[in-house]
Length: 200
Image (tube, rainbow, N blue to C red; front, side, top):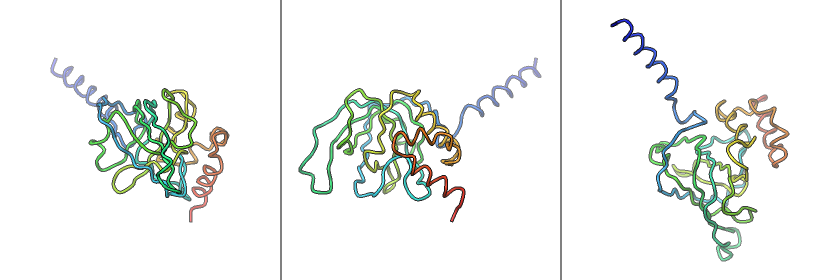
């Protein structure tokens, strides 16, 4: 009886260690979301936006899938360089979070940002969102960082999960180059692949 109990305890412990992964590397994080809203600034002065920025790729600080719940009218008085439109996204699945204050942010159920200007999106649309580190928090660099998708089973979601799981190694999704090309990111992905194959 004692040996059987110890064996069962050992097996349970192994299963727990397998299931309880670090949320920074897990691409299917289970979260009980609250009604809190995370305000994510729009770094409109950045030269690039989208899932593949920088010469060799910038690390994601937050990637998630959600549904647009609110869109305001465009702010045409924000200035000649800053065109803004505020919107809110209900977070449904966090694919990656990498921030020293991750536990503070991870359960917040909504994200609000000003970078919906010029996007052909409506309330109810499912989106895949890419955020980068900015002043210790998160930022959305522009409209190209919010991709219109049909749901969690969209091929882009599957591809980006692989990319995240492989520590943002572009070689892991090289086979998806045609897919990313269809969304206008083929050349940026190719650049990151070239950089990985021929590091400076």
